[in-house]
Image (cartoon, rainbow, N blue to C red):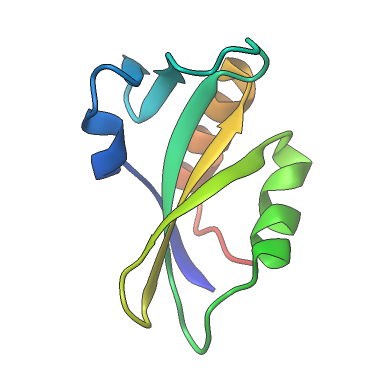
Length: 104
């Protein structure tokens, strides 16, 4: 995989569901359990074939994050996901992705 980027997904523009906390990180206002209510979007550019959910989970779990959902499959070259986690973990993940060339 090449080019894992942090992105502001269209889904986050629904102001009744999400509140912007800082660049690219949102609070899910509809999450009623109060556990890991923060979200971030990622976009993955696919090199050869679509990545499985297990591969994506293996990529984010070491950062104490989880895959909330796949937002869309924009053809054969891009996958978009919403990740969930604690605010500090999302901030660290965002910093790593923005400052390195992340790959699975």
